[in-house]
Length: 102
Image (cartoon, rainbow, N blue to C red; front, top):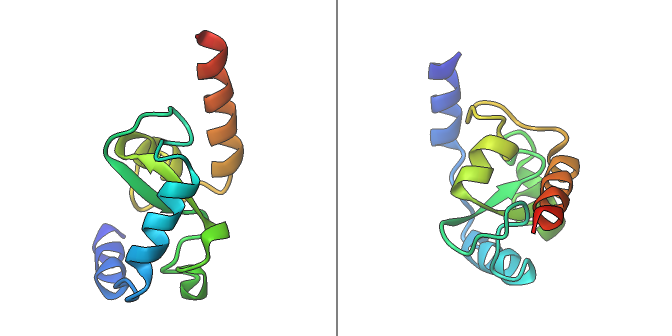
């Protein structure tokens, strides 16, 4: 399974417009992780995996900004081969819990 996933990700190259979409999403999200609010190691997560739905790769509504740690843990449930179907709910829940803690 892992070998097949690696082959899929090699084939799933980014469109020329990806850099602009990525920068736009990070700006929209205030240059912070939507879950933990950290400002470093920011990555853009596809809500619907773009290797499964390539037509959504450049759709801003299909993206959110996460730091590297939250991207792996929340976006992919601690396994890059997984996709969290509840990522928006989980990000919102964690963000609220962090705000309540402060």
